[in-house]
Length: 186
Image 1 (tube, one colour):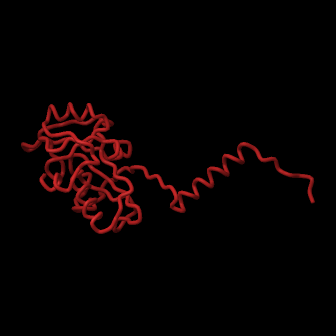
Image 2 (image 1 turned 90 degrees about the vertical axis):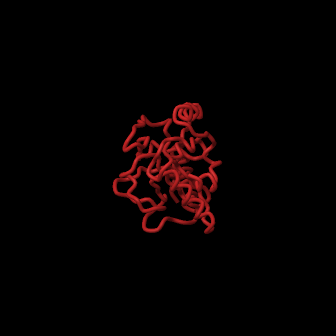
Image 3 (image 1 turned 180 degrees about the vertical axis):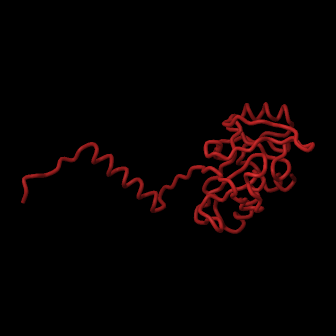
């Protein structure tokens, strides 16, 4: 028997606590997900279009027990419209969304321009440009178009959404309140 007994230090406690916490995430007891950057050449999981070749807001969704076909999560989308259409379809198939992220135009330096007679908004694909739908107010049915026609334009600052709607038309509502009927009518 040795007289040497290592002292438990604050560092040992913190490292041990962090290890337990990270293992609990692996076991599924608490899992946080973060938005990722959408890379060049990646396709929309709803319509198949190459995401970085089109303007407007984009999205990504993590599902609780399911993954997109052909790549690691999250499912990624060329538009907010495709994001919601995919979510609604997968929910009917028994998939449960864990988290959905959309482009947050309050967090980006965006531009709006006319191209071919359409008023379009810039796209932003970096991870920092996304926010959870739980934090977003969207402008629906404005004159702004994205990759799939009329865009649903998200903002984390509701005052930004109101100002955008005043300038480009449309209605503001919480992103979590988007319905199948609203998306179907666009």
